[in-house]
Every structure is written in structure tokens, then in C-alpha cells.
Length: 288
Ligand code: R5P
Image (cartoon, rainbow, N blue to C red; front, side):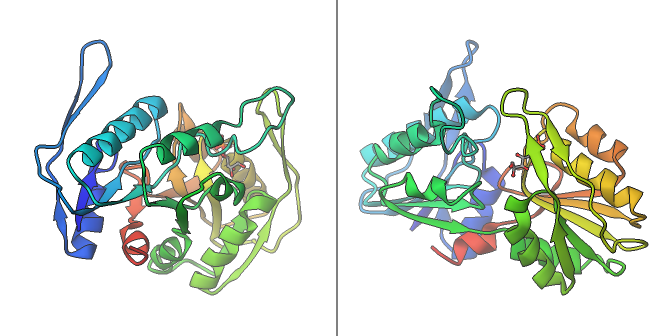
């Protein structure tokens, strides 16, 4: 068994290889002056079972092309069995047609991935279970939430409370709350289908003088978490933490969260950055 870590996931790829006690294939990559990507794997893979690890966060389309190049290449290099780990799957929020005439983007992405004869797809905290249905090959989803719960437990939070910023994140909040051993609740949120603007409705909750952890699958612009943080702050929360699997953090998201009173942001290495405080490698390695 050998791991190929794509350009978007060098650390996670290495951690998965080390958890599995297997080798890491050499990979060379660059971008040409016009922005096109180049991949080279100077390694013989005949008969090997290969695990490709490549996240597809910003710049999504380039990351997807790099993934397709790797999948095509390892087929040519003789890989016998291919598992593709996509820690963050681009376009997964467009998992259905919300308005007439819209493309179901993630279905296109799944078709493209499958066209490279992969045997198994591994995803982390997909936006909705619908995403899994678009794959016709064996697909497994793992969750970062138990690992995020362990990290939070190590922080010695004061009388913690876990909050889902919308109904869809409730199951994630429950997993984290179960890990910490505390109670949890959720807020109602509405997103304007055209402008993308988010409105969150106030709700009474018992958070006074307590550390509140807001949990979501993705933090993109930070709007969802900022709204929830403001509500928690107005209710007298002590410290506010924001934890997510996929910290996209676009534009001024970090500033926005800090202005809303968020004390610490916790992300994972599904998107590698300096807030990747939790590694999902153990969760992924456990199902490989
Ligand atoms: C959407 O429902 C997701 O679960 C997240 O809540 C959303 O992607 C967060 O986006 P933003 O940070 O831009 O509010």
C-alpha cells in the first residue's frame, strides 16, 4: 500500500501514511506561468494498492484538475486498486437544484472522479447525505467531530455548551457535545437563495458565564458563525469558540469572527492552514 499526497494535502497525506505505516510516493508539482498545473510521480506502482489524498478547497478548479492528473497518472503507472481521499469536496454545497435551471455541481464532480476508475472514495463531513448518493462506487464518510470533541476536552472549558448555528449542524453539535459531556442546542437560520445573506433568529439559551462552542461543517465567509456568536455574546456567554471541519475562511472571515467575539477558531487539516488544530488522519486511517 502506498499513499500519494496531492499538492493540497501534503501534511494530511503524510499523517495518513504514517498512521497506516506505509510509504509515501514522491510527487513533483508546479504551476506554469499561465496558471496551468503540472504533476509528476517518478515512481513505479505496478500492482500497488494506492491511496490518493487531495483536498479540493480554494482554488477549487485547479485542485480538482490536479486530482484528475494524479488519478490518470497512477492508472498509467500500474496502480491495481485506487482509493481516493478527498478531505474537502469542492462544490458539495450545490448538492441539489435550489432554483430552476441550476446545475447540480457536485454531481458533475462525482461523475468526473468516477471516470478515473477509482475503487473507493473517502470523504469527511459532507454537507448533506445527498452528496454520497451521487457516487456509484463505494463511498465512505468519516467525521471530524469526535476528534474536535477530544481537542476541546483538552482545553478545560468552563461549564461548556455546544451550539449548532443552524438545524443542519445539530448532529455535528451532538457529536461534539457527547465527546465533551455537555448539553447542546441549535439556532434557526435562513439564507437568501439569491444574495446568500444569512439571517439567524434569536433564541433564549442557558449560556450565561459558560464557554460556548459553535460547531459547523464549513466556515466560509464566517457570516453563519458570527451571527450565532453575537447571540451567544448577548446572552452573556463567557468565551466563544468556533469549531468546524472545513475552514475555508474566505476574505475577511477571520476578522469578522473576531469582531463577533469569537475567542478561538478550530479547524482541521481537511484544509491545511495555521488553524488546522485537529488532524482527521486517525479517522481516515481507521477505515482504510
Ligand atoms: C451551510 O449550510 C453550511 O453548513 C455552513 O453553515 C455555511 O457554509 C457557512 O458559510 P458562511 O461561513 O459563509 O456563513
